[in-house]
Length: 392
Image (cartoon, rainbow, N blue to C red; front, side, top):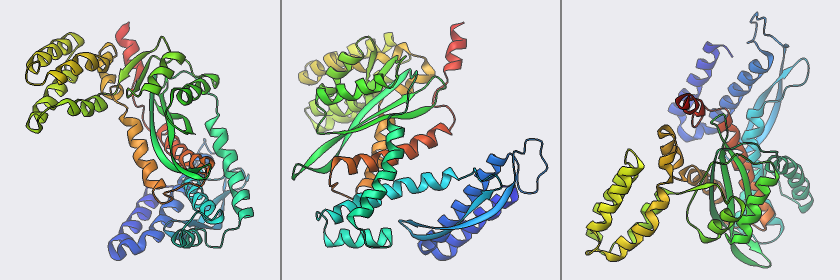
């Protein structure tokens, strides 16, 4: 799309929002999708409309109208076509995939009789029609094929691995349980992030984490140099069993939170937090160890339980010092997965209760696949090239 056309589209969106507020969201989303799809077609063809270019690989062939259902209402969009018929915009498909998964989660609740009247109403509003069990089954099968292929795709070398879990309410065996959603994020040799694994299990017990990690290895995961996670007992045992020689960085954010439980008086918490931050922010491991020793001595008498806890636990958060300085802020916490969890929570809170594990896994997978694809189009999360040059 020529620069002027893009500016016109964005200006039109801003004007709509300024004049009509939230009521303009459907039209704004329609304009944004149309603009993104036209831009994607230009990349596919290697040239903008009417542009002469040696890189051109084909020609545009107008637009095909399509009506899609979204949470902001029904949208009538113009899907760009090409003469060779081989183009379909990922921007439209990716944007609708998680929408489809959310609708299915609500629809399954409605069909299986576990929803409230309010959920049934929302389902009909979202989908535009009353949902039958046959329709749910057909749509779910189509979506599951795409999501399963993504979850089982071959992996490769990922030097940095982040692990974390969150919980969702799922109906299992006739009762509602808090099921664990296990998530793995990897940073590849190109420095880019990917969600490389997701699974819904009954808990974070060692047996579930071990199965999850073994599946990553079976899909070809290798070259892991560092695993960053919290200190959950089940995960720790599974990690030691499947990646016994890989270094572990205990999440500094979780350590900071854990430490507060050992501070005896509320007025001490700001000082303790500052002391721990100073340790984590030290320029090297030697200085971090010196500051840790000093902090332990500071609280040895006024907060003996805190001092003992710091001595035993804080060194697990200092592994990061043997890695490139430019990487440390990226690998010292598992916040990268925490941010994913926030986005999952934003989507799943609409469903509140999943009728089964498959429904939960479907929606979470759709959300994570969408985010992971966006990450791959971003700039590298870390640069391994600079580190290689520094070693020479």
